[in-house]
Image 1 (cartoon, rainbow, N blue to C red):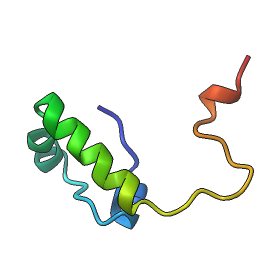
Image 2: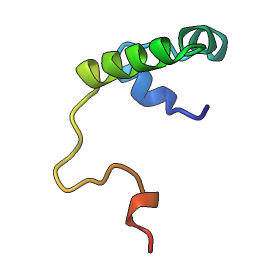
Image 3: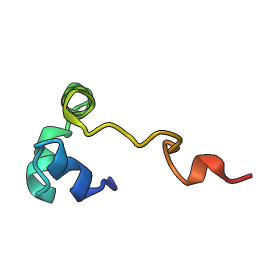
Length: 57
C-alpha cells in the first residue's frame, strides 16, 4: 500500500508502516482509517485535483 506520510501526519494519523499494516489488515480497519483521514485531513487547495494520474489522458 502506498500512502503519503506528510498527509497522514497532518491528519494526526500514524505513519509507521508496521502500525498501519495492522490497522488496515482488514477491510473494516481500512475503511475506518479512511474515515479518520477524511475527517481530519487538511483541506485541499482550490482547483487542486485528487491525483495527478486522474488528469492524464
